[in-house]
Image (cartoon, rainbow, N blue to C red; front, side, top):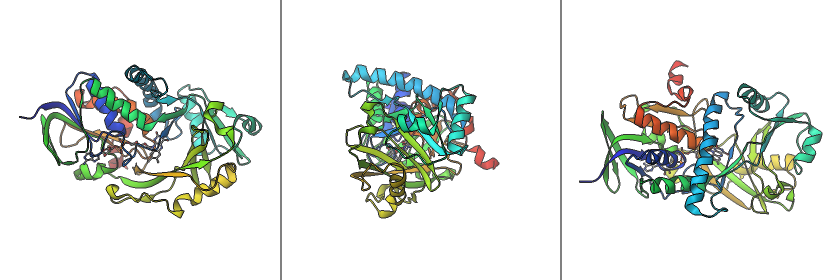
Length: 386
Ligand SMILES: Cc1cc2nc3c(=O)[nH]c(=O)nc-3n(C[C@H](O)[C@H](O)[C@H](O)COP(=O)(O)OP(=O)(O)OC[C@H]3O[C@@H](n4cnc5c(N)ncnc54)[C@H](O)[C@@H]3O)c2cc1C
């Protein structure tokens, strides 16, 4: 008879890897299953880096989750350093700072100020003349407000997923990769998960299936839309963007879209992307990974206006997916029919920074039925009330 587990985590990407880690740290028998290898490039958690910010313009209710996320990133980073014994390889989070620029009193800059004031977070308003010295290499549009958050920075995304997976295994978790889940069922105290290779049993199930969430949770009819998103790397001879020179990330709220990017990490290229826009994806397994002219049109305009020292042609691109909800806030809940099944979905293109704390919250829900972390605002019941 196959081994039975306390908990199965379906999908070991960004959120699933963190959830497996938190469960394994609690000495539970945990199984994580993924259709691809750990830290793969076929879902939503790849492309080298992800921005992390705390003064959250999207909604101040995220700030407590971010405060916990930062604490946990530091803990995981130190645990991972012990595992790798290699200082260069273990860096998960770099607090290099991020500046945001947008129209005077616009949603982004004002949202940052409001979240910072409400939660007593440090941030700076930067004048246009100071910005020329502090952020060389950018032509910031006239009249834009500029705010800087020194605690913000970036995470090495694949390394984080890999760290969670490796540490989880060190704490006793079992990972089955390259196995696709083809069905699951639940009774009040047991779940059965069938893959294309085997059948597994556990007391509870956590579903963190990213762009595949609406297929795995089809009976819930969650309001999810998957978008195709492109990350671009542009070469530059301008050393103003180098992380080694103390430079950080950026976020621009332009009239034709929102753009964000990272400092130059390799001495040659700057990675950036358009946060807005994106084509609907109907089959995440058959995502078009080629670079199309429509992928770069807005970025070209942005580069020519704001970052003219970057090559206009990208030297590299990567295609990824956002799983959007109508209000762009996440969905975290217990399954309405099965108390021993819970899920996290719809991370709407800004979830990765939260994987450390939301993985903890999902582990709490699976083991105790609820979490002390303030996640009520992420309940799907908000869509029923609307
Ligand atoms: C281009 C881009 C840029 C982004 N930038 C940022 C940023 O700067 N900051 C930020 O915080 N967030 C950012 N995000 C968002 C963030 O990366 C995502 O919210 C997060 O990575 C989603 O993680 P996930 O676990 O939901 O999905 P995934 O990491 O894709 O994990 C889902 C997993 O489920 C597995 N799975 C699904 N179905 C099955 C099945 N049937 N059987 C087995 N396994 C299955 C998949 O293989 C996958 O591994 C960005 C996203 C993209 C695409």
